[in-house]
Amino acid sequence: MDLPGSAPGRRVPVLRREASPDAAAPRVVVVPGSGCAGLGPIAPAYFAGLERAQVWVLHKPLTNPWVRTAPDGCGEAFARDDRPTRWQADALAALQALRASEPERPTWLVGISEGGDLLPALGQALGTSLRGLVLLSASGLDPAETLRLQAQRIGRPEAWAEIRAAAASARSDDDLVHGRSLGHWRDLLAWRLFEPLTAPVWAVWQWWGDADELIPAEAYERFGREAVARPARLCVRRWPGADHGLNRPGAGPAQPPLWRALLAATEANDAGCGLP
Image 1 (cartoon, rainbow, N blue to C red):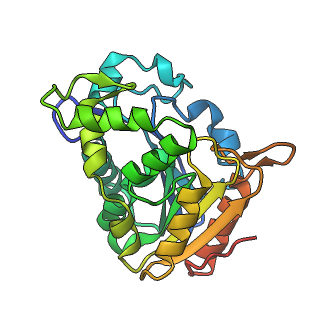
Image 2 (image 1 turned 180 degrees about the vertical axis):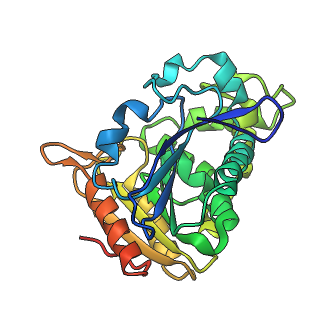
């Protein structure tokens, strides 16, 4: 379905699957990562094991949720529209519209990669229905710091320096730099994730693979060290050999055990880690 976004004419495509008749079945709200690839084609396999839950997947405006569009196929219109502040406002508007006609359920928020940046704001909006936040292949650090570490890791610190210099210039927000608009980079440089993610007393689950090609292990490990002293309950699972999509060669995806753990935690009325 398409839901209203944060301004007239803006629409948020949403994939929705109903829960089982069990009244206690949880709701899982999913925010995909960067780019414009829809989760529709892979949703049955990706969410295998979560059939009892109600699932809502929020997609960015100008995304076709039924097409796995490659990052370089999103087009300039998408790139110029794609800004973290705008996407957060749209996601909050869509979430409000979905909840308006629905009874509350115990709810888990899942952020995939860049989608993790939105979890604190969406969590605040859910209030007491929130059971926990789930970071999948998302470092938990402020996004600019994660990108800086990745630029160092791949030997491209000059690219990160170019982005920062362009963002500090008087150039238009619509100018494209390294595939993103300057408006996107300016939002990202000012975006704070670590503090709002770990300050409230809510459970934070983080699953990551040590073969992640887009986020260095250093970022995940640093989040684990620095977040352990925060009020949030932290549940971390590192998957040996898993890539950014949490796929493990010869062993299949890591998501099904996570979904089973979320369902078990909901049934036990406990946001503890419950990791297998």
